[in-house]
Image (cartoon, rainbow, N blue to C red; front, side, top):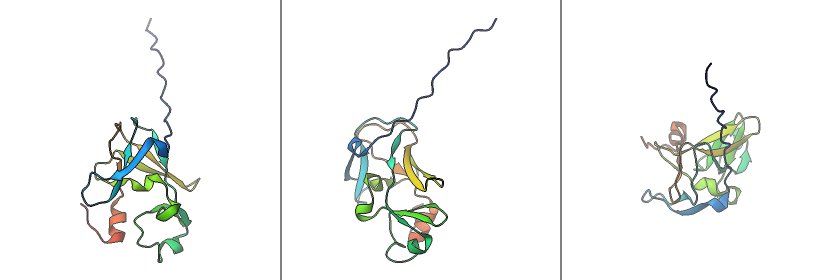
Length: 143
């Protein structure tokens, strides 16, 4: 008879909060501030919700929001703008073409969260890929 393999439990993601991170100058020269882990994160852990002022598509496509560097599209006619006091610590996550985190949106809940793509060590800066459209809208080329 065959041997029964023991069941392995799938690890549930840990939800982290602002106290688990530090905002300080980015490792990217001249870019400003970045977000750094204070604890070890594992792949799939949740860094936090991306929060901001809720905007319609019409609002997002007009001043003062159209050129915001903190504007995130969630779904049809739903955006979040994290500039100013409306955003939280996750707005300090900078762009990288080799990210260690990703933005995950929910059209059902009209929300966004940041999830670790791989293990992130304490003192490591967090990055996610903003996507080509982000840079196209701002008229910049980072490729």
